[in-house]
Amino acid sequence: MQLFNHPLTIAIHDTARVCVFATSLICMAQRGSRAPVGGDEGVLSFPSPLAPDKGATALDLVYQAADVFRDMEKHARETEARAQSLCASAIERLRLAEGRAEAAERAQRELTVTTQRKLQDACRALEQAQCCIEAQKDKLTAVELRAEVAEAEARQAKEALALVEEAIRKRLLCANPHADGRLAAVA
Image 1 (spheres, rainbow, N blue to C red):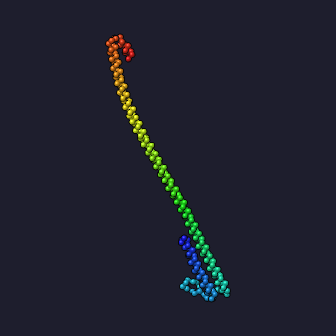
Image 2: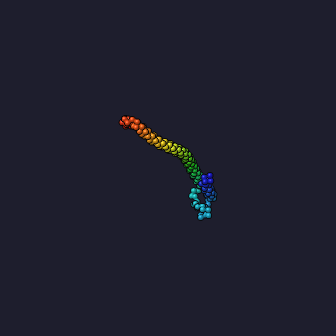
Image 3: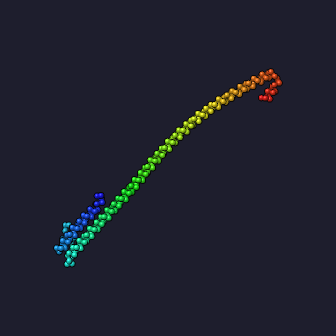
């Protein structure tokens, strides 16, 4: 508030000087004297009025002083109104900027939370995928082992079958010489 009153204080101070000046002019006009030339107070010298009506001159000076005072008050009010308008505008802009900053911070927090949640979901999915891959590897290894065992068993069965066939041929051929042609046809 002191900032708003500063121009008004200057205006009142200047107005007080004008009033003192006008009062001294009125007094001089009533006495018919002139203001001193080059006085210490910075008062200018005015020639004595040519008009014989000194009261009218004094009254005119009072009106002029009142006009100056009104103009100074008007200027002070306008200056204060402009200052208040500028402050209100600055406060509104500050309020809007704070709102935007809060909205940006809120959006950043939401984005951070969303990103963390998605990252956690991705980590869980990766862990599950790795577990599935390990389980599939284990199953594949077991299938490969069973296949090797089955191949070994198949080889053994083939070898055993070949031995059985050989044994059957030898016994049948030795017992029946004509069966050789039939066995060859069957084989």
